[in-house]
Image (cartoon, rainbow, N blue to C red; front, side, top):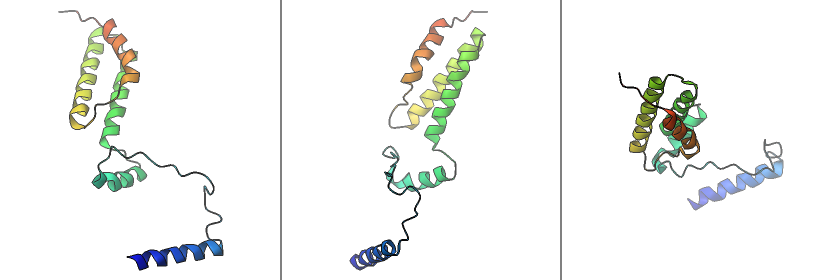
Length: 125
């Protein structure tokens, strides 16, 4: 294995001397490392490939759906419909929390969510 690394290093040095790396996009700029610490090590490569193909992990997709559902609450005027939407958001958050090792972080949206819940009154038929 040591010989392989030595060969690779020699080829990189030769390419640098030839100037093969002079026109690389982003040269001189810091590398941006993605935080994938919450992704299990055996799934990181698969998630990276999916991300490069335009797909996102199911956890992020769920968070986007929850965000869209809470945004919908803002435009609802009917109290019963608002109450159903709140129940839907609660169910979605519960499902996400059950499938993850750490709970979903909705604190930035919780203030608005709490205001909507406080404003909602359901009339019995």
